[in-house]
Length: 217
Image (cartoon, rainbow, N blue to C red; front, side, top):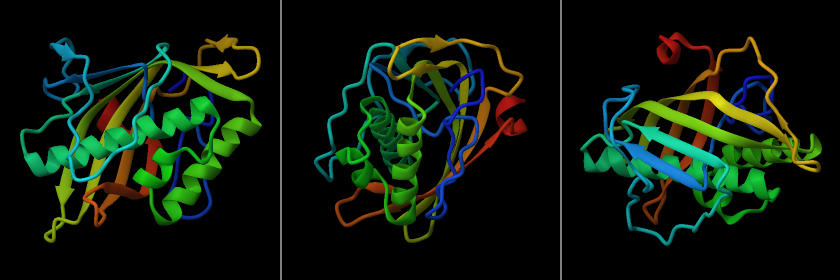
């Protein structure tokens, strides 16, 4: 989510967290959903979050107006897959909420993460705090692909992000770092999600690969 190296990346497959360049999540004071084909450019957008399944009382997240997410092609028309994507988007929202507020115990984390992915997410947010960093700008999420397992309680979700309009911000001074970077702004995410007893699709594993041709091509 930045044009220079930052902490915004994740490898939440185990207890340890890898600090890379790139973004694992994002939510903004403005969240838009574009129903056009993923990666498709100018279509109509609606200022509304992806619809979540109503099986649980989900945490309410309100984020600063200078942070915006654009979900492009995030609705598939398949109710089961759209429920998965809604909770993935909510996990992105909740993670950025925790980063921006500097709160490693934000309720959205334990709601949308589980197992070692949860401990990895907390460590990742703590790394932001140690570096005195926050962020600002816009991240575009696109090309989602959902594969439901036969039992329909686990799924794999791949999606891309475009971080070219996101930037580091010093937590203490508020100064935004817009220094250009030769790093690719595109990141491919590969996540495993599991449906809990309340019907929430929780992330149990998440990896990222910056510059993947599946996103930049």
